[in-house]
Image (cartoon, rainbow over all chains, first blue to last red; front, top):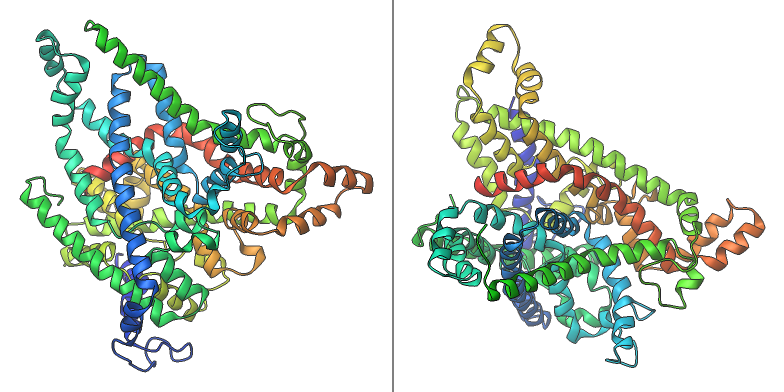
Length: 287
Length: 300
């Protein structure tokens, strides 16, 4: 009964892994994976020596770090704030609303962002102009300086509510007696958050932190493809994944793109392994 | 209820304000797009449309519903979501059930074989070329088959199946039921919440996926709605779309419509059509997905 499914995994997951070898070949359409000539490290050298390499590496690392810096604490803050709300109705409404963007496709989110930031009476420009902060509408999505901010903010907007679910569950598991005792001792709510809530959910935070670090080279793909449609942004928007897509699928430089992809995969897996080790050391092992 | 001091009250007020702000920032883009989709395009172009339509109209939707490409794309998405979700959940459950059986020889190895694929993959380019060599480009099945088995979901299923009492399957086996029968008639029906959660996540994924169709499909008849919307956002195919609806409308209606409908208003109406199915189901499924996220995160 499991055999067909295993054969299926063999075909659709393991065959492409074998196909990675094409990074060491000059892949030819008619030869396929099995009959293309071997060229060793040629494509890797071409990638490392290309002027794109440093741009792409810098963007990948900077964008992931920015996402980590802002995207990681945001759901924790949201969970802490929701936990302070006494009106259950209000809490439930805010929660339901905050999950919503998670269920939208990036195409739709991109449409919203485009509409909000549009120079053609987009709401953000209308607001800025009515507050006299700017006289001309700003074309946000074609200014390289704004791109990282827009990308990170959109990501937080989309996932904050959904990511908060786990933290809320962890907070719900804290023994209420701790809070009672603290309040008898005269601790303010703020102190209680600091001294009880945060330490109690620390293990969960650490686990997710480690997972996030293991993911660090996944700076984004869909979001960047959708938000950075203007080629002016390429210097700040191109990350390894989008570069692989552009070189491979759009320009048909298959072997070259596969080499860039493999380079990323090797580093990612090493980072994951290191993060895993760190997790064991800190005592909250993942598996 | 514990008593609040002054500083606590300040904190409370601050938190309510921040949460209201978050709620507003989350909902506003929807609401604004909805309003623009119900406003005449010509009027929207003057600006100032925020919370209410200034000159309400259904023209934008009329254009969208008369456009055969949008209708077709919507159908492709629905079909893909239904077929993809049913098949994927079924096959994933079959694998999970098999791997949860004690009598399966070497099940540890099969498990490792599956889990490896969660960490290593061929990546975009080899997968793309493989599917191309299989001749799956421009077929409906390329949207369904490569994602048929999700190892992540399989692990969640398997963990749940392992927790079921063993006697259940045994007695059905003794009564002459085969394995498929046990799975379909006994195990799946009592796994309701897990099935619902995983089906929801799979369905949302299928509905929202625009990327695979954008690289595997050129045939306009097989483009799902999200991919079509991406194309509309990116280019000016809206102009010929406006012309194509002209065929369906009477001459003077067409004139009037062309005046009131613009690229922006049309994009917003299409966006609403592509968003609607999700907005409609998700409040009802909330309790399931909250549970699902927790199962998923605890069983790493």
